[in-house]
Length: 166
Image 1 (tube, rainbow, N blue to C red):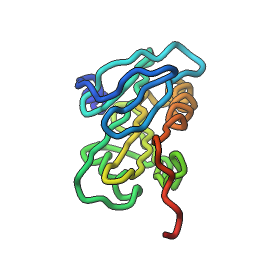
Image 2: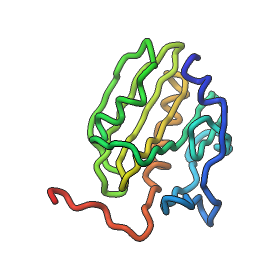
Image 3: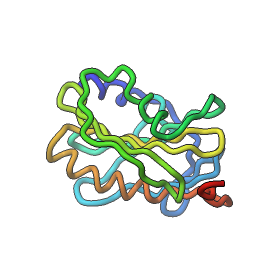
Image 4: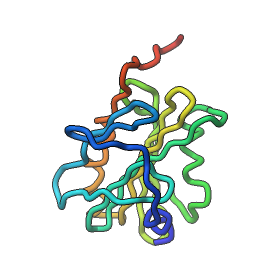
């Protein structure tokens, strides 16, 4: 499980617990608590993640962000997440939305039987990445709906999504 090694190492983020979830103190966005069928998600520290959760399987979901660098489209930025992941097989990729913003999702089979799903969006001068890592098969299939529901709880406080075409 080569890809899982970086996910097991940790650093804390800027998230504060609030009723029903977490608020990022620097960037002003909120995320709910992950839930869904299966064992409960437990908060853990993950290298390069602001916030992460794990449950048996192993199934790990996390949010990373990077700010201040040159930005591009979510589809190009999403590819950066896969640098160094080899071997890998792209299962699917395409546009999606996060809180009304353009985003890009991709699912890949990585070495060691690990499947990854990522969702990338741009917010102001930051890139935000949601990452699901789980063994391919039943564990991934159980974790994916919880990951999608968790990502859908993202809300950027006090700002409206950018208008399309302008």
